[in-house]
Image 1 (cartoon, rainbow, N blue to C red):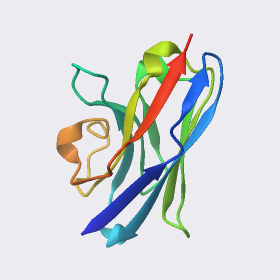
Image 2: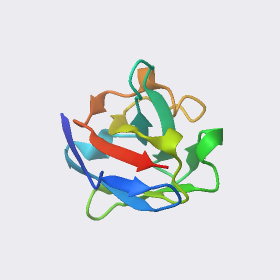
Image 3: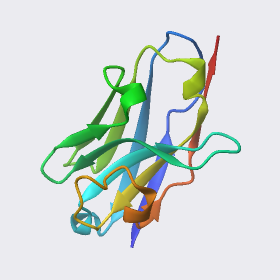
Image 4: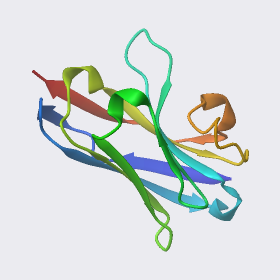
Length: 125
């Protein structure tokens, strides 16, 4: 089992920045992909950014150049640095951990086994 706890979500103005953190515990050595996802009201959960065991990252097109995912392997923490925030970035953000070894599927919710409880990000314009 892997337990994930997100933090860092808050309300910010458009153009601002936030850093989300995801603290992992348990059998984290089994995890291949770490990802950040978000789910706006009435919409499906979508992948925002992922990082795998090798450090390779992927981003959805709408956040490229604005968001950066990273991982502190020693402390088992995954970060999401979010810059130039827009109102459409508003959503609860979830951290995910997946054992399935898939690079091109690393933004797909179906490839993730464990989820955190979410942290709310609200961007006001």
